[in-house]
Image 1: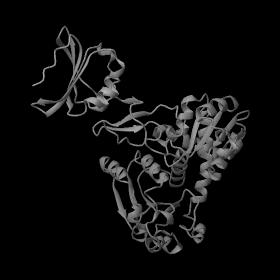
Image 2: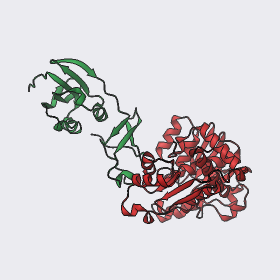
Image 3: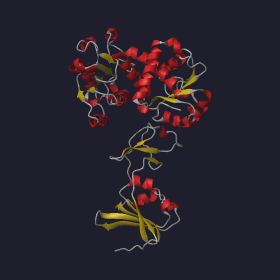
Image 4: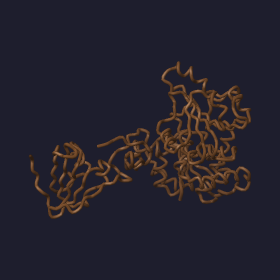
Length: 303
Length: 143
């Protein structure tokens, strides 16, 4: 029985199979509409997350399966003090697969150790969010046709963003990827990631300004710069506009550059950019459902 | 100079960093063994200047070498039989350590679920870095 705790749990060959399946689902929805008939997914969400939970639920329902679960710890037995281990033992008798989100890091792994059904980590604090990374990889592979040989700019909060860290760790397994990290000094990519890139001889660049690197990028992965991350208001006001993507900045980009964003967006991408054909973030959210459908089928050994 | 007699059967932990013997005594749970233990602090050492030594009269199998290796894999473990050194054990960093150190990450699941074991995995052998199995936080605790 397999689970998904980290995006690196799958080899690149296994991911390739998963992405092929996701693309087949995208193109042949009817073929998979009853693939999970009679199966139940438990969505155990110990903290609210509308987007991820709905994406999992949509994936299971599109496969013909059904969904049970809870959407915050207050409405679950955790409020009565039940451990994650006990909860998953009970859920194992109720469902065939479980997607778990928990504010505490490592909670899905604790569940995995006691579970009789496959467990998917749907986000554990600031630690891992593997299905977001799989979504990002599927989006790049589907829209660019490859997962190697491109320059990707990662922009915004590169210090605290687990999405960005996970994506980098997943992308370094592919060939000829050039990273450009665009952030204020306060939110630079952590040293351990830079060290890992140096050890693997992977080219990277760290810059403050988005404008100056826009023409080089094949992909731009935007994240939110949160006001509370800054030491003072002045710095925030000074820097925030550097990292707002608007039509003016898009004019500097290649005609086939893609803009990705894990969403939700606040103001870091102007709504006017939504009409640009290079804006791929809503398509990315849709790919999130296909990749979760492929993952459910794979873990249930129905693929 | 202080003289501590030979032991007939047991082990001698040599080249312990000066001042660390009590911590090792504790982590090897030697207080729970019903045997003779000699703790020698600040013994003269040509190599280290000063060192600690532990002499324990008990079966070698009662010693948790993994815990010892985690604490300091440069410690020499001499196995004694009939007052002679019959073997020198080489300590290698254990791949896993359980309930020796605690995860200090307040966001880790082990911080709220008390019955969970604290398991650390060797992440980088050269740098001797261990990470919590659950949250992957780096251990900074050294004895």
